[in-house]
Length: 176
Image (cartoon, rainbow, N blue to C red):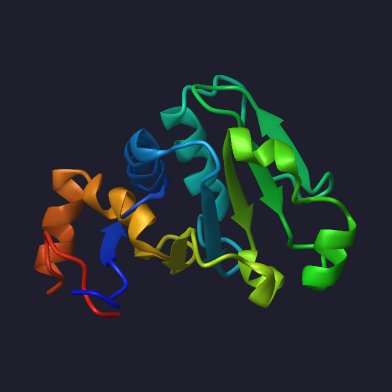
């Protein structure tokens, strides 16, 4: 399976389900990890960040850092929550110092990560969220390299079952 990107597609039915999924995935987090969140406005990127933070043991209220761009939270690992919604592109984010050496100690979760374009390293977990409003969310979890496959492996059984129902492989990564 060399050269294949481990990927899983799951569905959550509400914000609590998105938070539960993210919280369970946080068990696989290691220092220096990067989580890329992509989805339309209202898709649930901040809900995912809240759940991931809860899974890391963050007790502070996690909110979208749209106006401050980055918020740091303390948990099992530091959580660096970045929101690029108000930035035009990678140059603006990098010039603003949003990516720095402190993040090697914790996990960086970036909302609107597509704004970093080619400046993003391959080593990351992409979380692509489809759906808005009251619709269920289709969430694609894609490991950027073999090191991030541990997130796919950490997928809780109830979410793996949904992936299997959707025609996705329940154990091995797909080629997408």
